[in-house]
Amino acid sequence: MKEKKKFVIFAHSGAYDKLYQIITLAITAASMGRETYIFLFFWALKRFVDEEFDVTKLTAEYGEEGERLSKRMQEINPISLKEILHDVRTIGNLKVYACTGAVKLMELEEPVVRSKVDDILGLTTLLEIADGAETQLFI
Image (cartoon, rainbow, N blue to C red; front, top):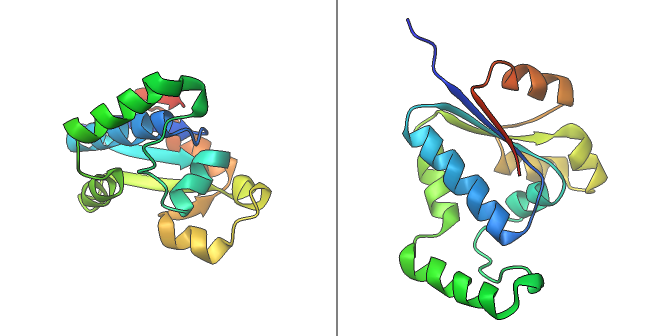
């Protein structure tokens, strides 16, 4: 039996445009049948725990261009990232894990984090899961 291809994203940034990329890449890979993992660290973890996926205000550094892009993203895809992520996770081949150290560093409450992710894991375990992945991205 052929082993499923693995697609792994190490998610660090909490900027909306990067979160958008993290989620859209993950749901696309999962929808294509790949074993997909999002590993959450720092600001990406905080945004996932707070469920702040749909903040359409892009970082201030993009100014008017960011505002235009934000509006355009809403026009093209009015379905929220939270909804899409939830729907794809029910398929079963998209897992979201929080890093133990990042949970502590960001001073997040472990029970709250556990309610938003599949598990909280240490770096050793995350790297074991990522081992042999065809695609590994750091965003």
